[in-house]
Length: 627
Image (cartoon, rainbow, N blue to C red; front, side, top):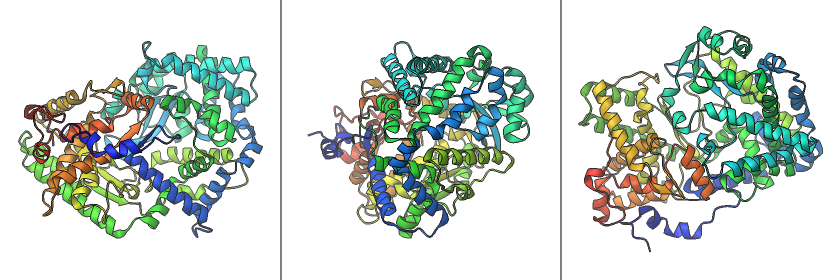
């Protein structure tokens, strides 16, 4: 039996780890996933038994859900629904034809193109949108997989080629032609990978802001007529483009050019066809998911029933979230969580007020940022208008989704000329998660996370709730002051509100957090401390603030508090999945989140009488404290 003093995670989760199996259709099982599964079963039961929703969007959802699960109809449609999209690629005779068709392909088709033009909130002017530029996604999870010495590179790319040939054969392509397309996409992907951002670069999102004047942007990229493309999308030219991937921008003409035309054409075709399998016959959707399952170490595809649920709820996510919120989220829980959030912000303000390593001007601005923070709990007040256009007809599922995506695409580019809606939720209410939005200084807690083991008004004590949802709430607040969020002001603008001395002190503390995690061994690989630093700063600040709030309760039980923290990070996962996350996820592995953060708190050692020589021991001088 593992002693808690040696390993909090293993001790508090011992029974769960022994008796819980990873589902065959998932790469992992965790506390978050158990809630996902519970919500999935609840909603699937509801949608199977409710005859009428009495609400137009959910009525359309019900029709879509039924079609998604009609695999006889999906089989009968075959691959014909994708043919109009395939023809758009096949008819491209040369590179000139390709670039001339780009605005139409981006706006009105399902055909992917090897770069991204997106409308995102302007980081330095958060009430307006900006046009952003990035490269294309890669076949492998992130750039580290492309290193010659990566143990899975050849295995995965060989599997991808073989799997692609099978898929293209089912679409009627001859073996030799299918193989040529499969090999071409891998060749073009290798070009893309040379210039793509690393996961570490994506994690430092303030550094993604590289504004280029529109004239300079258009003149620098000579192989695509971007003036025409951008006008075709926005109806006008913006003043600037924000470049997210600098190496892609600097080497764009080496990616998109006439010499690469056949590679690009194969890339577009294979990406289109592979993505379409999700909406076709059962055999094709299983075949199409083989590569992602190989990547993550998942043994089986989702069942037809679960797949139909996933597909339908993905298309109507906010509508399903509103249904879930209205049906299952009570006012008592909302009021309790709102009280805890208010308390946590107050704790943060008080801790900042007593901060010993910041100057008064910086402290005052940090407190101002907390005062301005907006909190959304449960579910939004209304559904985005776009859902009114998602009507279901006799078309195939693929054709319906294609039509919906075109609606989304037009809406996406049209919003460039509108002010940013800071009340918009970017996560549906039935999703088990929470987030902080730096460009609106907002924290959001969807209804679905407000359940055991994170929260229960009847089955958990206040101390347990503080160790669960309390720490999650404070974690999201802490993101306002992590290495990324700290660069944004009270109004959501990227704007340096720190003194130089204070920011240097903050950077020194970041380095301590990086060093604490960097190089730790887990799942046959090691942690990249720089990749996970923002989430670790949020974990550390969140746990400290939640504990401070818990200590104010008359019946505080720190043993229950720390044990609950250990329980919410319980997880079992395939080795492949864990190693994939270590290369690309900004969160540290669950076991390390549970164990390392508590070992930075003096109260943990006092509560459980942890001594030098115990596995959980950390010398007082090595305990990292930021917020």
